[in-house]
Length: 450
Image (cartoon, rainbow, N blue to C red):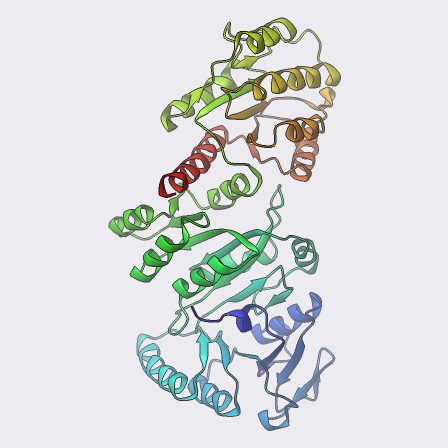
C-alpha cells in the first residue's frame, strides 16, 4: 500500500507561485491554510513577492531552509518542468492542481511526469485536482474556500465519513456544506486524473485509516482497480457509492464486490448517518410509532418493498400499549398509531412516545424502531426523552422521520437528535426504511463471511 500520509497530513507544505490576487487558486490554498490554523510549516514560492498574507515568499527553491514534505503546483504553464525541479530538489510528494484541457496536452504530460516520477522516486496526485480536505488533522490543499468553523467542529471527532468524489465541485463543497444534521467528516479528496496515485490507492489508505469509519464514493468511472479495492474493504468498512456513468455492468460488478449502491447523491450522506450512529440490527422486524395512519402506511409500504416486517409483540407488551396509549393503535399493539390524542400537550405526546418506545424496544421480537413525528410548535415536543430510551436499549437502532413538521419544532428536534446521535429524515419516509435495510444487509453479509 502506498503511504499517503504526506498528502493528507504533511509536516510542511510548499505552494508554488502563490499570487497576490485574491481570486486565484494559489492564493485560496494559502488563505485556507492560514484560516484553519494549519500547524505545519508553510513555504511559498513567488520570485516577485517578499511576502503574501504575512507569509515570507521565497524567490527560488534554493532559498528554502528545508525540503518540504509536500509541494503543490497550481500554475498551468511548464508543469513538467516545475515537477522536475521539485523532484531534483528532493521533494518526494507533489500535488498537481493545474487544470488540463487538451487530450494532446494530457498525453504528453503523462509520459513526462511518469518518467520523472520513476527517476526520482516521487509520488504525485493529479493533475486537474481540486485538492484534499483533512478535517481530523486540520489540513487542506483545496483550491475552493474552506470554512474554519467547520474544520474546528470536525476536528473533535474520532471516527467519521471519508469521501472520494470524481467531481471537484462536490468534493470542494464539503469545505462549506453544513447539513441539518452534522455528519462527522474525516477526509475528502478529488484526485483529478490520478496518473500516479489513483482512487484505488486512496481506498486502500482509507481502509487502514483509523478515523475513517465509512467510505463514500461519487463515481463517473468504475475501474477494475476500484472494484478490487472495494472487494477488499467492504468486509471491514461499509462502502456506499453513487455512480453517474453509463456502464451499468460495471455498476453491478461494484455492487457485487460489496459496494452498496444508493439511489441518489444525497443518500450517500443520509445513509452514512445510520451507519455511523446505529448499532447492528439483529433482524428485519421493526416497531413503529406515529400520530397518523397515513404516515405509518407509507413506512409499511416501503418496508414491504425492502423485505422488512412488522414485529409481533408478546401479549404483555401489546397490552401495555393498548392500555396506556389507545388511539387508533391496531389490536396487535404494533404499529402504534396514537391518533387521536386526548390533548395536544407536549408532556402528553412525550408520554405516549416514551411508553410506546419502551414497550416496543424491550420486546425481543423488535429489532429496531422507526419514529414518525408530525407536530406543530405548540406541542413543544421534548426529544430529550430519547436519551434515556437510547441508553436503555443501546443495541437496537432508532430512526426518526419528520413528516410535515413545523419548521421551528423541526429545528429543535434535529438539534437534540444530532446530540443524541439519532438519525433524522425530513419528509423522506422511504429513505429512512431503505437506510435501515442497507445497514441490516451489510451486517448480515459480514456474519455470513465469518
